Amino acid sequence: MSYAVAMECALPMPLVSTEWLANNIDAVQLRIIDASWYLPAEQRDSAAEFAQQHVPGALFFDIDRICDRHSELPHMAPDTDAFATAVSRLGINSDDRIVVYDTAGLFSAARVWWLFRLMGSASVAVLDGGLPKWLAEARPTDAGDMPIPSARFDAVLRAQHVCDRHAVAAALRTGSAQVVDARPAARFAGLAPEPRAGLSPGHMPGAKQVFFKSLLADDGTLLPVDALRRVFGAAGVDLAAPIITSCGSGVTAAVLSLALEVLGHRDHALYDGSWSEWAATPGCEIIIDG
Image (tube, rainbow, N blue to C red; front, side, top):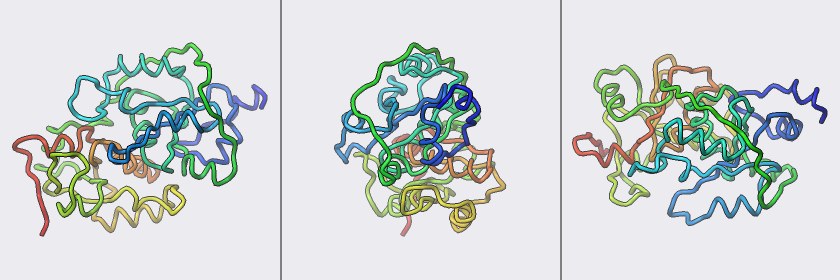
């Protein structure tokens, strides 16, 4: 692909198709990120799997390392300096266009999309359907590492994209925003255990439940806009009102956030501590159904 053509290729946001990525994979200032991550119980090594197979030119983003290393909560967002340092070492510049994918289709990639937006990136999108769709279409892959170019990423916090526990509690108390939980219905209801030891199942008082997988088609891509609206509507979510997304540890909440962006809903933030913090904090009310 020529330099002139590459510069004309605008990045669709917040989703790009596998066809778009295949056509623009050599574009100038395009950086592809593998953000694959698994729950601890799955006992999978995302870095090792990346080394064996990834989209050509991709870089590996470790959610459990590029995080707040001082927090007892899992993979909380780091501060701007730590994020900027880590991302610069990956070879990513502030003005690069970024496409994020994962090996599940649409799972942890949304978390890294959200992180880059939180840190000020103006051009970041998720690969719809991720690596499974890429492979199903017999597109090429690479193995091993690639040389990392020198880069400088300057992070600027966009605080409107994140909520802490106090803001969530205030929203629940006053009704100023809806809390929408991406966990499965059984965990939300308190009828199935949490994957993290010691955490009670259940949900926050007044929270609504939209399982993140209910927003996905069979091939791991995001549902069409009309179908997304129906899923949120069936859960009683008012798409004209502010929303706080939550989940177990702030990963699949970002899938809800991504879907809201696709729907044109801009007044939403992600509760970074999510259930891992809420359920472990004395005094935070937990509702168990039945």
